[in-house]
Length: 344
Ligand code: PAP
Image (cartoon, rainbow, N blue to C red):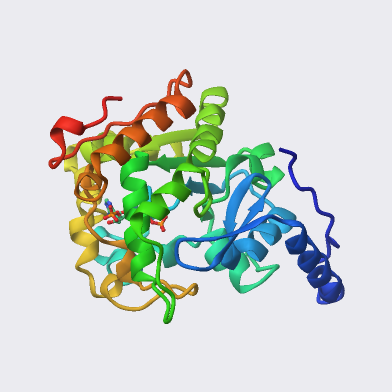
């Protein structure tokens, strides 16, 4: 499928806003659309399913974002560990400015400390002022690799991608959808949501294309793209925090290692620590999502409580079909369906 190319007036001044609005509305009319699990629309834009709420922001991001060499871009499919990665990257970068006991993470939600391009920056304004963000600027995005602004790919900025096995990513997303449930809208039953997922119709899907885009980029440009897996981080967060710090240019000194700073940061950013903070139990995101919806169970294998054995087999086949030969695999473990556990 061809990538949709659009030509917007480049200017960020109010002059031309009307023109931009028209071009955007025209663009929407040309895009295939489907109902998302929660009843809102998804648009097939540049070969990925973009939630209607993020459409305008994604286009503005592509049109106007100018990456700096020092930027750190945290990328992910939704529900793959973004909140965790934001907490870790922010804390690692700012550890000399704030002692951990006074970390802004204790009073500010990770999603506020590291804004999303789609749900914060370009959601609030088509041309946000990003000049005043302290260096290094840390931003997060769910936009697929192929659709990232050119300046991100062409500059020296770093991209850290986190992904998660599709079984758990699907189930986490499913619960998130239920939490966001709008009045008078009955979310699709899981069986139907699963069908759509298999067809790639879900926020920022298809999953396979999203992960493969960043996976290939990480193989081609390992200095540019760090590829992390949620399951590996759960297994050994200390070694991953260390790797992350090195990659983004803020390595731990041997003194810090001896003092146990990596362990302390890992503890501070853990699910158990973050989920009980007042700031994460209350309040909501500009998109309307409550902060507590980003903290549920944080387990590997929770899918076993939700997917039937036949769904699991179908997913297993899809993984083989879509990712076979790519070298990308996922660890999956379930306490529940041990006998039906897919082997990957
Ligand atoms: P987002 O992409 O919409 O920002 P994201 O943070 O990627 O969401 O995913 C939320 C998942 O990460 C939830 O998983 P669950 O539904 O299976 O429970 C959430 O619990 C989990 N999560 C949030 N914070 C952490 C953390 N600090 N450590 C590990 N997992 C976490």
